[in-house]
Length: 214
Image (tube, rainbow, N blue to C red; front, top):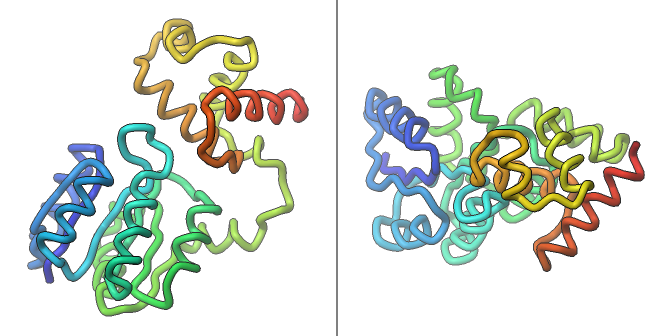
């Protein structure tokens, strides 16, 4: 089997490649952004694409969008998506985009080698593999406020956004990098279901959701 990996974390990307190699699965390309994913898919025509949902430059849904575009170009391309946590909207979009050869797993499942390798083979054969946690949350969707899905750090970032702070100011306040704040902000937008539009408009809508929940 020949696979392409798209994951912005160097360590996770290398770890997945090594794990697959130990199982006799060849990684023909490993990239860190959505545009490169599309390029190597066209070049190598792999048996499976393993894709992170969030990648540079905005860390929102670049990986998923690239995967969906790839499926439009090659409808029978098997795609296994990995996500840090359950992102319901993205899971629904991916699952509804094709009839087979689709997987959606939380990244923590990679640690269970047998489970992960089974998912790789199942999706590559045209099957479906959806994380049980994803299924559970999809079944419960609509019964809670999206703000509740934010992590403590994301709530903290959103609270500082509500104070009118820029990303740079938030980074200085929390003593973290600008990139880390950008990733948190992207996560907040995604969890609140705020579609890409003008940045300031999304920030205002996110803050309004935060204030209404308090």
